[in-house]
Image (cartoon, rainbow, N blue to C red; front, side, top):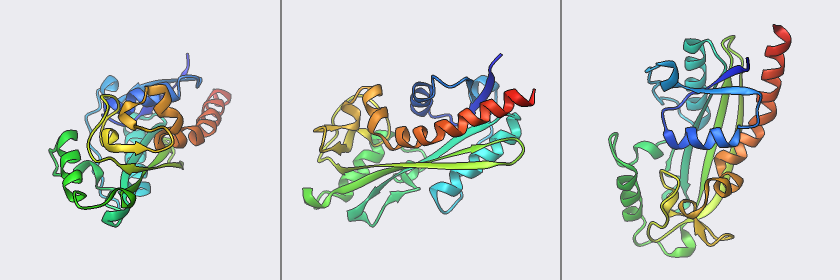
Length: 205
């Protein structure tokens, strides 16, 4: 039987991406829903790193499994780096993706194209029940589009434009997005960490 790794998120988009990114690992990927865990860990940290660590540690301890959690943010230069770690709550606690997109575009309505540079950042935390934590990060540079394009992805993907591909994140296939995205880059750094984790678990048996 393969060792288990908890994907410590309720975001279905993230689960789908991680299942694709980590499919070749010798680990069984399980979710909070599958384990019946309803605990919500508040993102009260002052950085993406702190929030990722908080979620991974708490949910690893509760599940008694190694846990992978991330915190991601969109940083827009014209807004001084906002929304950053508050990306998911930028338009209010119960806002939908379309509400967040509309709010951000409204904030940028008078900003010319050349000043709409932005980046996605992702920090992954991998925690074990024993309390050990490792962090891996990735980022993706782009621009905020003038309007949404594409049906794929989630979050701010429809307005995150990649000049080198002439597409928004939401216009990419899952495989293509994973190649260039902040989460894909962080996951590739996390891959050897998870391989070592699997190996050490097997040798400890």
